[in-house]
Length: 94
Picture 1 (cartoon, rainbow, N blue to C red):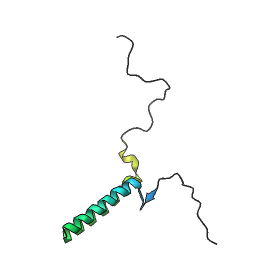
Picture 2: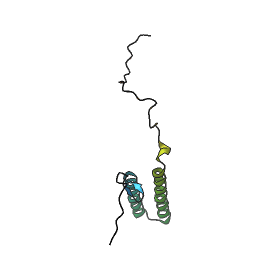
Picture 3: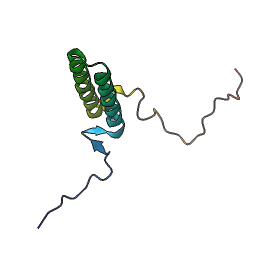
Picture 4: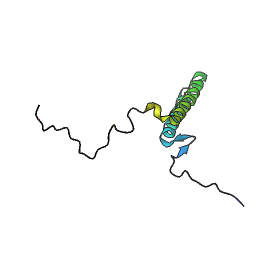
């Protein structure tokens, strides 16, 4: 009888070839553009260059996916939490 693994990570992000959908779409666009470049300007240097470009892009995107906190520019949590409505208007006089 065939056994099925229980899918516990249902809320995890969908991955294609180990990349999230947005990174996979970027990789796919790069591959298609590389194929167009190879077709219209065929040469050994172009072939090797586009191959190295796509491999490098895949490795960079995998690293970005593995460590997303590297490029986080903002703090995750605010310094304080309040229910008071924040307003830039100052009613008091100096």
